[in-house]
Structures are given as C-alpha cells and as structure tokens.
Image 1: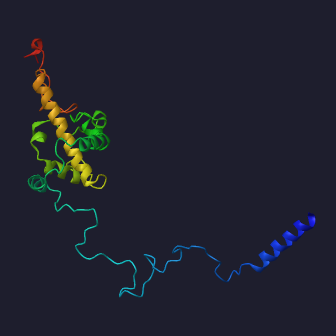
Image 2: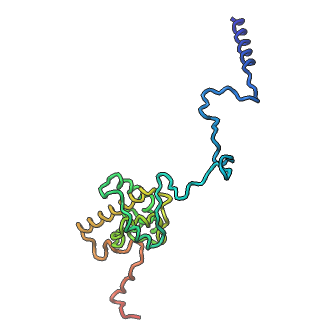
Image 3: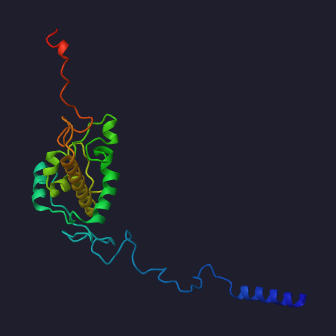
Length: 221
C-alpha cells in the first residue's frame, strides 16, 4: 500500500514538472470568453481616428437614449410657456402614478411644503422662510406644465430637481399635488372651514396681519 502511494506521489510530481508553467508565456486558458478583448480602452490612444482618441464626441444634436431635453430657460416667462405647451402624460385616475407621486412628494417636497402641501414642513417650522401653500388659488390655477417647470428648474428659494428626479417622477409628483388640491377642495366643500381659515390663507408659519389691540387699550398712548 505504501509503495502504491509513493508511486502515485512520484507520478503526480512528474506530471507537475512536465506541465510546469513558463512565466514568459501565456498559460492555458479554458473558455476565456473575450477576457483579452481586441477593443481599445475608452481613454487609450487609437490610431484609427484622426484625433488619435478612442473616445469620440457624439454628433452635434445627439440625444441620449431615454432622455428628452427641455427646451426652456429658467425665467418666469419660460415657466408660463411650459404651462401652455406641456401636458401631464398621466391621467388623474392613474393609481400607480399617484402612488409613486406620493412617495416622490414625501421624500423631496414634504420637508418644505409639508405632507398636506400647506407649507408647514419641518424646514419651515425650524425658521426657514416657509414656501407658498400648494393649496392656494394661485397654485390651483397653475397649469401642470408650469408646475412641472418649477419642479424641474426651481423657483425663488426652491432648488431644481431635474437631476434628482426622472421626468416621469416629476410628472407624477405634479399629479399627486393635484390630488392634494382636489382633496382639500372636497373637504372644504363638505365642512366649511372656520372664519379666517381657508384654502387661500397663508401657510403655517407665514407672516400675517398683526393682531388688533384690545378694546380697553384703543386710543391709549
């Protein structure tokens, strides 16, 4: 038995010696599957192009796949024009779009606008100038395209979100804002708000008119 093991060991050592690797030559590869690609690396020199570069600039006017540029500036006039030219591709009764819009609104909009859209978010409650309520008449009358422009390019203290949100998510956020406005209008119609409180009232934390002086003090220096 020991002789058999010794013979097997010697045979193994002999096989290893015969198959020893030559460090100056490539080793045996099984199914390399294009490990050694013939293509040039992106930033490697390339003699096949006039400028000697592998990475070539796209043809002028090229639009990346899945990306549609917005041909608007950042001015209020551009926002109004967007309201006239752009429409929301998602209908009001699109439940999956509304659900996604609620997630986008909660993550990106509610810190300032609040979950209800009244401008009472955590940022505003900590001393930062509160944003306008999304339930006031001006916001309700704003066209979808204009609201989409504001969400894309920003306005006043609001930053742009075109880099953080896809075009579809921005439209879904607009759709959800419309849902909040509809719910608020329905609640106001079913149960009238107390005097001094309305959908057009300033958002929570906004400066309002000063309180009137008590009757006993009127006229006193």
